[in-house]
Length: 202
Image 1 (tube, helix red, strand yellow):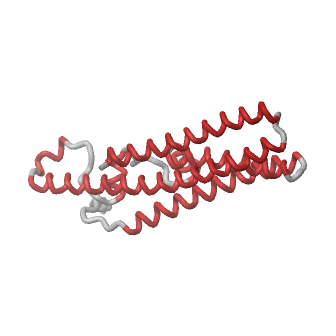
Image 2: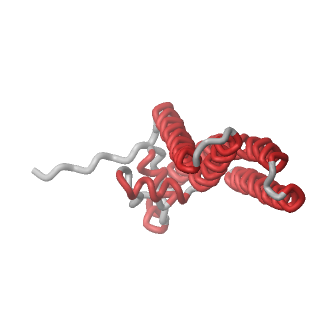
Image 3: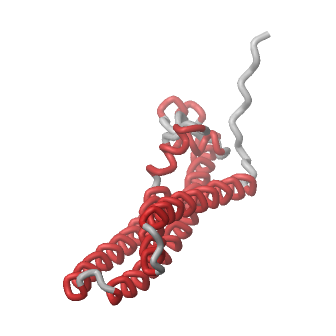
């Protein structure tokens, strides 16, 4: 199931990047024919709107697939727990944990040292598939707003400000949605074999 989840994740990312690359090539051909005239601007707005839509839906789907992957890891940890209940003497040979709480899941995935706040968390977030695609989608949103502002005759400063604002707003909205989605998923999970709390020094 994890392999299927990874396969769909990679195929969704490949589809988005293929659409983006095709859009850039198509716009380059239109630009040669129209020399960045009004026809080019109109086509670019329409094409980038479609690319942005696909980018946002890809981020949403990737986040759901990440939740599925976490669910499969939880199941793997539970199976490992059942195995070690029958053969506890073999625990020293396992490099992953038998606990199905999020501490155990993080250890199985190798994320136990991932920062949980600040710049470190942000850096980790943009390294994930949803985070990377979200940044690319935010760039598309910035370009789209810049085209619209330029078509309406806005000054260059307004065009630049609109592009930067759209990038920041899109990235922030997708990031906030991703964090809230993960927190809802985490809150809905009830571990059966949580790790024991460390014993406090007397």
